[in-house]
View (cartoon, rainbow, N blue to C red):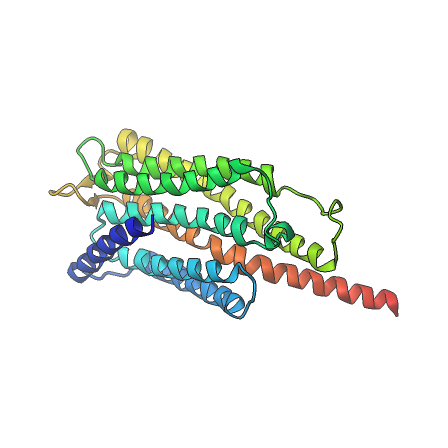
Length: 304
């Protein structure tokens, strides 16, 4: 999977850089909004990395690597906005954005602060591991196959590639809900003889991170459902002239503001996906620390 991603990502990066060099730079308020959002996302990733760089947790390594991967994708999405809107690079960025979301959960499932994970104990059953590895394989297949079909055709300007990517994202959301229910939807550790304060805090952090992940996922599920609806109904039925194909069939031509809005919707959705890691690994941790400080202050007041 890593080799496939590196190969396609390299080709995507080359396409974006080449198209950016040939582009006419015309940054309007939409471009300023895109760049501002990218910088804010990158800053969130940077802050999140600061927490985990000095951490001794087994989750720190996967978390930092994933956030570095996301930082590269954020830069590529921003550069893409300056290109001639080639379809294949956007598909790759969208699919890798979906994959990044999945990797957040995979990192939590394999290295999270749940006490039973930290102690190497089995959580759930074999179907959990099977579901995780199946999704790895499916993302590799969709990335390769979808890349081959990411082209614009007359009468069908929205290629099947985006439907494949979004459909896999929706399917993975359902599968990860199943994984959570089977292995990680645990309220307490009362059955564990060695339960202590650290274990309870670890479990609290794990549950906060999983809750933050699925909260973000629910938003993205609605977002991508609307995305597919716009692509197949809005463009192909009601506003057929809003987006057309260029002469080579590998890029979009936007004839009206509605078409440009459609592109903005797609690129913003990708960046929302890339913000999931910082939400889970940074915001949820900071929020929990703040909550614990409040509880400690209350205990001190009661003790007085």
